[in-house]
Structures are given as structure tokens and as C-alpha cells.
Image (cartoon, rainbow, N blue to C red; front, side):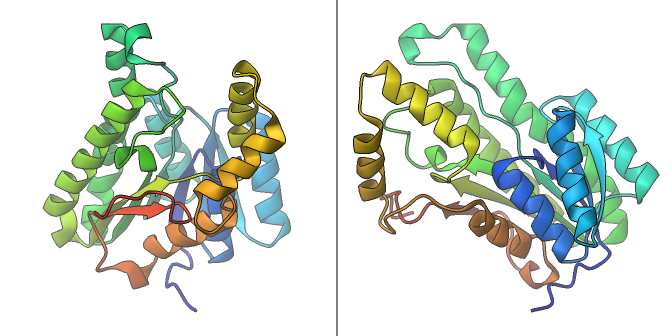
Amino acid sequence: MDFGIKGKIAISGGGSKGMGRAVSEDLAREGCRVVVSARGKEAVDQTVAKIRDEGGEAVAAYADMSTKEGILQVQEVASAAYGDPDIVVGNVYGPTHGRWDNTKDEDFLTAYDGIVMSQVHLLRTFTPAMRDKKWGRIVLINSVASKEPHKELPLVTANVTRVAALSLNKSVSDEIAKFGITINTIGTGGFATDRYYEQMKRMVAENGRDWDEREAERREEIPVGRLGRPEEIAAVITFLCSARASYVTGQFIVVDGGQVKALY
């Protein structure tokens, strides 16, 4: 299937590990010229090398896209290497603050800056050139916690700010759709990544649980009976970045193996 994005310039935020790396590689296989952005130089370089070894085009941008400065840095790298981006995938780590009783007022402000304001900066930075081209694709990684708070992870600041980011994306998508720009948000469920296993093993140890027992329970919680594979979410994101997805915008698309029980 031709997705119609060969030669497009794509920024893959958080694009060096786990789901982000799968997105970087998938966009490159579709012929995009990919700017792989993340904070860790070694992982970024490994991802760029893998793409190039497979015959694709990619450059590295060592930046934190949860900040305005980092986003501008990535824009500079993209412009110098290829030009103004046509595709931007935003993917930043969520807040790590705990339960309500353990949070302070400033924790909510920090979370808001990292999740909501980072997307404000991203949209202000990259949409003007997309308007001029009359074409653009923006996909922003969120969480199923925007529909249903996680039962185990105590992330009250993340739950609040991720919903705010979702509302931002919906509002802006309505205003710029006439310019051929789509904005969609992905609600991620459980995926088999190193970060997921690090978090879950830490929680299991803190709660004195048996790892194998907890993993079996986790599989039972997901209707498909397993965690997702990074390439599975990358396939959804790549489609949303494609020319074929021109009529899909302002949507919150959950990719979780059927775990969330909400009807809408």
C-alpha cells in the first residue's frame, strides 16, 4: 500500500527507543526523511544508523521536546538537513508525580508545562510552514489514562494534564483543518518496551508481588491476551501520517488491545 509520503520530512519525537523508535523506522521505510529526536545521544545514533543501514534517510537531533528550547533546536536540525517538516510525531515522557496526598501545587504546574505547554510550543513552531504547504500531519502520543485513570500507577498530575492536552489538540485541529493539516492523538495502552518493564518491575517489587503472577494478571486484563508490540502502534501512527488519512483529524485513537472499557 502506498501511503503517499515518500520524500516527506518527518520529525519523530522520542524516536530512539521503544514505540518511538518503531515509529522512526516505520516512517523511514515509507520513504520519509526522518529527524530522530531524543535526549540520549547513544540511542539516537543507533536508530539513525539502523535506518541508514536499511537504505533510509535520517539525521539525529539531541533535544528534549518537552521544552520550547528543545523544539526549536529540532526545528533547526530539520531545516538544515531537509527543510520544513511535513510530519511531526510528538512523544514526551509524562509526569511522574504520585498520588493526590503526595503532590504539591507546583507539581501540577510542572506537569502542565511538560505535557500541555510542550504541545503548544510544538504546534506554534511547526504549523506555520504546514499552512504554507497546505499539507501537514501531526500525531501526539498520549495515554489511555485520558479516558480511564490507571488502576495502579498513581499519576494524578498526568491524568489531569493529559486530558488538557487532548482538548488542546481537538481545539486546534478544528481551526487548521482547512489548511490540509491533521492533528490526532494516540491513547497508548500497555506495550512491551524497556520502559514499561522497568516501571512494572519496580512496582511489583515495592508491593512485594511475584513478577510472573502479576504478568499473568496483566495479560488477563487485556482482551487480546498480551501486551502490544511497538511496531503495532507504529503502524497506526504511520497511517495517520499518510496521505490516505486526510479525512481523519481531531481524533483520540486508543491502541490498547481492548483494555479500556469506556464506550466513548
